[in-house]
Length: 93
Image (cartoon, rainbow, N blue to C red; front, side):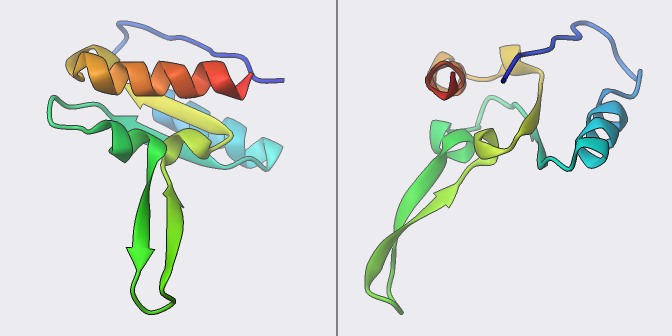
């Protein structure tokens, strides 16, 4: 079961260390996203690209496909990038 957990407005309390420790103890994958104004939706969700060696389209997953995700400073991202993250979280349910 996936459930979001929020720890807002707290700097330097070890959120990343805590999330990494929880992921390691549960045997889950962990990723962290530092949201910036220049972050694109494809940086969050992943991208389809053409592999010239194999002559096939491949999907490179973004950090939202991890089991535990730490999204830092979401409010700095563009609305389009925020929407991509929230849409993926909604579809995962």
